[in-house]
Image (tube, rainbow, N blue to C red; front, side, top):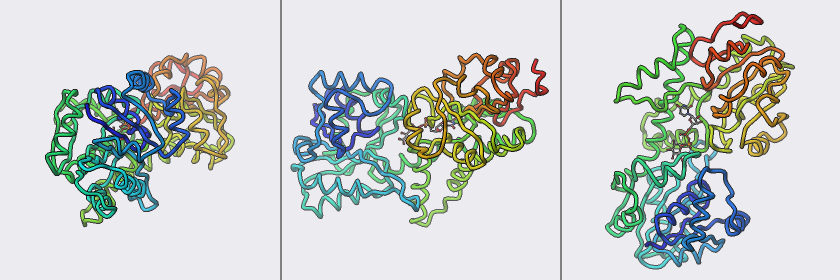
Length: 441
Ligand code: UGA
C-alpha cells in the first residue's frame, strides 16, 4: 500500500485517484476548486464518465479515498504525489504550464524527504526537468521526479485505467522506479520503464500519431468522394494489414476533444523549438480544421442557400460516451452554419448543458429527441456517433422534415436503410445512395 496524493481532480486526476484506491492504495485527491471538493466529499461526481461514480463510491466506502482542499495536508501525508492539473493550450499553441509550476512550488513547501513527484498531465518533453528545478529552487531536497503519462480515453476511462494496454514509467532513479512499479503491481500489462524525456515523448507521439491516422483517412475520404470509391471499404482493406491495423481509420467530420487538437499543436511547438520540421503534424491539424467547412460546402451543393434553412445537429459531444464538447466539431459546425444564417436545433443524450454553456449567445434550440430536433428541418447532420441514433425510426423522421437530407458526418447510419426511409443520404467519403428527391425506394 502506497500513500498517494493526486493534485487536480479533472478527468485524469479523478479517474486515477479512484483507480489507485481500487488498487489498494491510500489516496487523497486535492483540487483548488473548493466547490468540486465539496461535491466529491458529499458523494457526488463532477464529471460524466461511465463507471466512475461506482468506483468513487467503492473508494470512499473502503476508507482508502478521501478528498481535500488543503494541498499542504495532502502532500505532507503522501509518499508519491501525482500532478494532474490542466495544461491548456496557450494562444501560440504551446502548452500553458503555469498550473504545473504553481503546483511544483506548493509541493516543495509541504513534501517530506523521499517524496516521489510524478507528472501525469500531458506535458511537453522537458517539463519534468522544470518541475525538478522549481522544487529545488524552493528548497526541496531528497526527492525524485518521474513521468507516468496517462492514455485513458473519455468514455472508457475507468476501464482504460484498470486494464491498460501498457503503462509508461519515466524514471531517473531507483526510488521512483520501485515506487511506481509497486503502485501498479496489481495491473498485469507491459510496463515500459524508460528515462523521463522518453516517457514524455511517448505520450505526445502517441496522440499525434492517432490524430495523424484520422487526418490521413479523412484525406483519403476526400479522394474517395471525388472518384466514387468507398472509404469504409478502403479502411477495411488497409486495416487488415497488421502493420496498419483497423483502428482510428473512421473517416468523418474530424477529431475533437481536449487532447488531440491541443496535443498535436503543443508537440509541433516543442519540436519547432528544437528545430525539427513538423510539416507532417501541421498538415494533420490543417486537414482536421478543414473538415467542417468541407461539410458545409457540400451542404450548399444540396440545399443551395443555407440562410433561413433549419438544420438539426444529431449529437453535440466530441464523441459518444461523454458530455465533453471541448473542440467538438458540433461547436464549429454551429458557428459556421449560424454565420450563414441557418436556424439550428440540436440533440444529445448527455452533452446538452455543456454544449449550451460553450455556444453562449449563439441560438441553438436543444430538443429532447432526435425526432424533435429534425421536425420541419431542411437537413439533419450526424455529428456524434451515438448508438441511440441507430434506434431512431428514420421513416417517421424523414416524413416530418421539409426536405429529408441526411448528412452523415460519421458514416454511422446504414445508407440503404436511410434511403428506404425516404432520406437523401450523404455519406462521408463513400457514395451516397442516390434516390431522386421525393422518389425514395
Ligand atoms: C485520446 C486518446 O485516445 C487517449 O489515449 C489519450 O489518453 C487521451 O486522448 C488524452 O490524451 O487524454 P480521447 O480524447 O478521449 O482520447 O478520445 P478518442 O477516443 O481518442 O477520440 C478523439 C477524437 O477522434 C474524437 O473526436 C473521435 O470522434 C475522433 N475519431 C476517433 C475519429 O474521427 N475517427 C476515428 O477513427 C477515431
